[in-house]
Image (cartoon, rainbow, N blue to C red):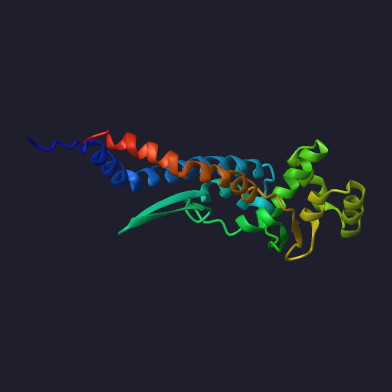
Length: 203
């Protein structure tokens, strides 16, 4: 006489439960990595606005990253512009829009001449050779005739400009689209199946 009991199924479930935190971390990390790729692609579309007025837009992609940290009893992860290789203080205003007041520098004026030259189909050298020699009255008249923001920047006497940045939602639109995906990734059944695979069904 005797009693025989098979605990293999229970042990397998226990092993699966032990592996659950790793499965959650795996899924969260996977979601974060995919989201960062989409954010970088979205930031890339902002780089069409080149020049000193929007020079920080080229840093949005490099500023975007992720961080996964483990601590006793759990882990946490973050996705955003605070986890990249550079800092971009203009990330929020590029996303939400607003007013900025850049300082007029020689570099900005050179960029304005270049942009105006492209806009008008002229060479930069030709522009610098003619327009800078005009009187103030002639320069103002030329600016009015050209109706060009680039020429206005190149000839401005202001020390700082008032620039309105339109909202692009380059960041929030991606996060809003990706939030439902995160819920799918962390669905209890999905996590259990992944944890079961990770535990190898050992019993």
